[in-house]
Length: 211
Image 1 (cartoon, rainbow, N blue to C red):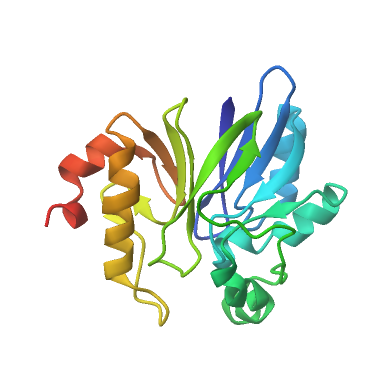
Image 2 (cartoon, helix red, strand yellow; image 1 turned 30 degrees about the vertical axis):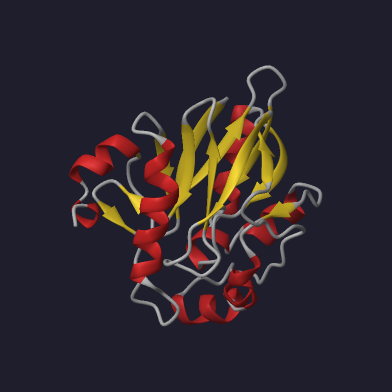
């Protein structure tokens, strides 16, 4: 499994492209915008994209999903949890206010729930529901590779924002402590913004987890 990270939009959101080196089949995670750049990177890498996967419904993670789907011959969009439907239904209105003219509302072909799996880059990722940042935020974990995609749930030295009307800091910390920390200190993760980290590093140094 290979991964390329392409920060997009003024929010510098980590759009990720995962693929299998043998088949070159892969997935795009959280195409928040700048779809022409994402398409150019897909072409440069030679990846055959099979699906688009969303960790949650925020505009900087999902605004480009519909346009990318159309450009890639209607491949399926999977995730997040359906509790983020209201966010995906409001992308265009939010984009008009925030200067994201390319934002399009999107309905996934498959909502994901905890306990299911999603195939990316030739391997299976477990789906974990980790609310708090948004009601439907998901984390994707491939245990054999000791790797996770955590969206905006956990960051290096920080955690996801919960100051939105639908945010919940208690839910967020509980999800991290009960679902992410037990994965093991050797699990490395890519987050939605900035550099990645490991569960062990965040357990030891993240100030939000030192209570």
